[in-house]
Amino acid sequence: MNLGIERYETILITGANGLLGHKLVQLLIHREHVLVIATGLGESRLPASYAKYYQWESMDISSEEQVNSVFEKHRPTTVIHAAAITQADVCEENKEKAYIVNVLGTKNLIQAAERFGCYFLYLSTDFVFDGENGPYIEEDQPNPVNYYGRTKWEGEQLLKQSNLSWAIVRTVLVYGVAEGLSRSNIILWVRESLMAGKTIQVVTDQMRTPTLVEDLADACLLMVMKKSVGIFHVSGAEVLTPFQMAEMTADYFGLDKRLLQPVNASTFTQSAKRPPKTGFIIQKVQNELNFEPKSFTSGIGILAKQLKLADS
Ligand SMILES: NC(=O)c1ccc[n+]([C@@H]2O[C@H](COP(=O)([O-])OP(=O)(O)OC[C@H]3O[C@@H](n4cnc5c(N)ncnc54)[C@H](OP(=O)(O)O)[C@@H]3O)[C@@H](O)[C@H]2O)c1
Image 1 (cartoon, rainbow, N blue to C red):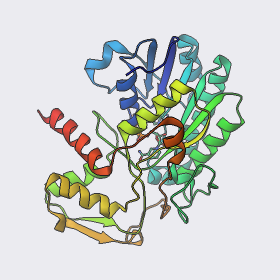
Image 2: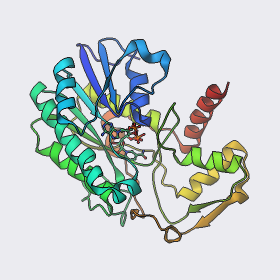
Image 3: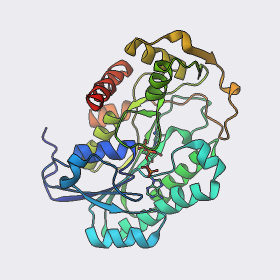
Image 4: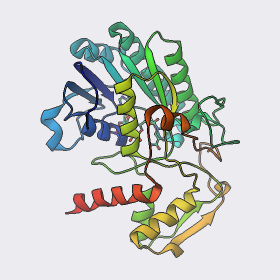
């Protein structure tokens, strides 16, 4: 594929040990004219086979000093900012920490990027919306109902106020598989639970447009190539309830659907309130970037192949 990146780019990725970070590194390392600076907390957990194709920097985004020192050393031209505390309940229970990482960490990166005139792509979330009227378009008004959503929305506003060339990529319920992840996702959770013969309760009264991580990484790359500016909703196109996703996962892997127990969200006592009906209308990225996401069933198939490879 001709990626159209003609001049030499130094792309700095934050959160490279995370699900999206893994896939971004994988996508970018073999491209011509691209130098990848992968950053994360502590040591790299990326596959050893990638090691010679990127440079790793241990960088806690909440440390201004660490951020400045990595920027001075590598002078990036583009920043893809995927790092965050991404679990809504963790943010709700540790507000100070969530603020320091998700808001002040983003501020540190923006300030450093301003000094080097970087193009800045920031990952945000459907949780900036209250979930009363989804699926949403880019112009809809955010109104987060939990602390995670608030911190991501504050990050968006910092970026908009900056003098950078920026894109905000909001996404929804990302699924996929990679080595050494610090969190699971819906397909892995359903598959592992049903394989263990465990009954699980799955919500029927929430709506999302689940996103295959490879699709999200492709969209980020397209934006970096085009230096797209503005807010973009990037997700799958199908509006599904978590229960429907669980049924489709069980069907795909031939697992026992009777272990899936349909429940209302009110059954759970989670610290962070969840927006009921989110999901995105993705017409803007379809029109402007020719982005076409996989169907949820194809996405499960892609993930299944990767699981098989990992097991073999
Ligand atoms: N996953 C979803 O469903 C979803 C939905 C909507 C939006 N998003 C957004 O998409 C982006 C990528 O998500 P993801 O699925 O790849 O999440 P992820 O797997 O949780 O990755 C986030 C990464 O950020 C790292 N991180 C946490 N605190 C940090 C700090 N202080 N300094 C540096 N790195 C730090 C984590 O490190 P450790 O691995 O070491 O903990 C993790 O590797 C996030 O910005 C998220 O808000 C995700």
